[in-house]
Image (cartoon, rainbow, N blue to C red; front, top):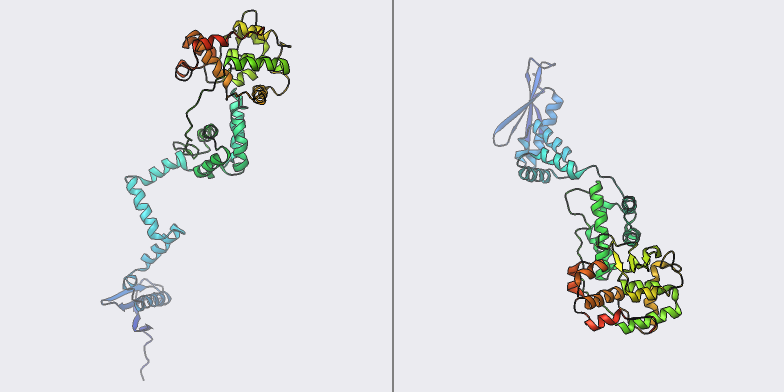
Length: 404
């Protein structure tokens, strides 16, 4: 019996048959090449240098044909290697999703995808320092105070509640929604809401300028909304009420008298009264230089002392050092208002300054002069204080003598 040839090798999976033939080949080490042959409607073949590689390819083709994947069976080994490499590059992202994203990005960049990506990374995408909210606030305050900015009555009043909630969080991780919730919870009143938002926006903008946040984009703080404030009502008191309060303070708490006189007869802001020094009060020249004017306002000024103001100030027991010496000086005006409320006298917020401006405008009729004395703009005085009181009422305000 003749010896049966060991080729072709037959690979069967279901009804699919793939054959592997051996042919002579001059360039291979064994002198043979192995041809894989299959039929998907057309007779097809591919060649391998070793029998093992040919048998592996045959089993792959037979499996694909048996599963009905004719297109996959037509893939060459090189095609499969490229597919595997592409999937490896995509990582967890599906290959089709990666290609769709690449196509969209390429269209947006007009074909210059790498250049556009490098530009974006240089401006926004990389190199940010991971910094917490509390550390950002600390560096911000240090920088502002080094530049001479007084942070005690502004930023240092807002930042503690901010860092209490977000202190250990990364600055980049805070969303506008979280900041809006914080503002609504901790600062629900429209005025305090907008004040707190203003301070936080300043902090986030500074962080962006310093490179802690992406440049050329709105910060999360800027994307929060301002509250709608109610129309401001100018609260004033009459000369009779002011006279009654002056008399009560002189008799019951004379150390507060100077603060009340300066607030009502000179129109200083509350913070200006609390920081006023007697060295800047010149009774002989009948002028007062504001010791500590409010920043970013036309408030660095000299205020004339009305004759009645000089009379009342001469009654003050101690005229040296700080005007509001003694109990915490930044509370004196609030303590005076509390004493007024105890007397069942209604004293609206900022009523002493508002009353001075209103009565001074009524007395002189000169908005420009009053704006210089009060450190307000003429426009605000014209819009808010003009015609609040009559001329006779204005004159009566500056005729409240201690002798009465």
